[in-house]
Image (cartoon, rainbow, N blue to C red):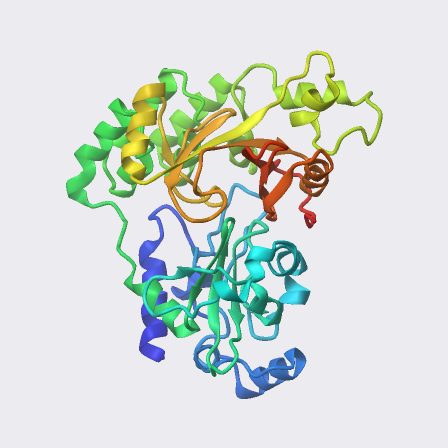
Length: 442
């Protein structure tokens, strides 16, 4: 186990951007690993949990009592954000049963949808690439071993009857992928293809940014290519509202980057970089002009409470409020050949498609205002087979209840997303608005 854990540590640090730094004390120690747990620490945790922890995870704890990393990589220190996102492996004293640590997830995956709990869909994962979970009932007996990131991402150990070692489930917004054991998860992580840019790719990455509008500027910066500042300056001079550019400049630092950053903030009327949290606000800034959602909220202020659960996005359809329109947040297109589909939609719409960031799922998505257009690999899940419109809502649980009361059905509920069908069987999605409270959907 020791060589495997050491390779995990090396791979996590290898995958980090040259502009990022791991949170303390990982940065000072040059390692995402923690001090070892003792056998007594583990025994106390097992007594509290009422179960013996699986062998490979037990061995890991004796080498590192959790880690400042997870399947998402290293926990990063974000100097421009007040909130620091945690997703790393917990100390054994902090791990907890799924029913305590993730009651919403247990409700969604183990109780709500019959297809998720049909034993006929059960299988045991094989070593290698993780396999999509089809039978979620065992999750209610599991143990969450990481922080729960963004209400979605988490790692959980799940026991299986007749097996000493437990499966490791990696949850993302569309479900969970299973590894046969914690050790198999570590082996998969260290063996993943290296997706960091290579020096010979620099010219191609520059061309993709300048001619195709693809977000490759961060990769160019990662290579230390001096053209990155010139490209960023040209984009700012052209009036870009892509907030990733100032965020990248802030991470890069240096006098030329900061000069451009000041130019962007002055032109956009964004917070000054003298504000220690100003760059965090840039991420949330939208292009100039009235915000449909903000205007909708102001019109809704005088409406009767409880008229609809869908909020401003769909209230206009249901109550015919004057001046309000339904607002799409995302149009999603699954594809058998995602790269071919990305090229098709990019050329048809004249829009750039960027690799999705954390919390958006897999594939590509257009940046900027709503509705975004998304492309991802076709799968077997309820949201992975057909093109879907996603409507933004402020209350996902209430919206789902409203769908049911109007004669629709809920195919796949989630913590922040839900796949539904209307009264005629046509599928559509609901997406919880940023900043809206995350409540269980029923």
